[in-house]
Length: 88
Figure (cartoon, rainbow, N blue to C red):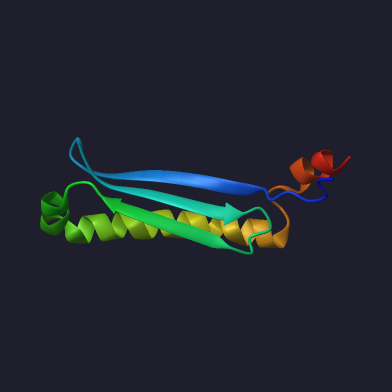
């Protein structure tokens, strides 16, 4: 009998320089905010090296957005209504 299930939020971002994709970022956060997992793939390492400051700033913006979402999950304000419906 299934008694529990894990609900998570998946976030994806692409960092570009011009029109060229340089980095793919994937973040998974458990619905209760208790755990997060980040994967980063460098698609164009030469372009990344030449634009490292911009790429790192974009990565930080993504992480900041993820932390805001995680804070809302921990505080119970983001998915309360959704999870309430799932339990009924």
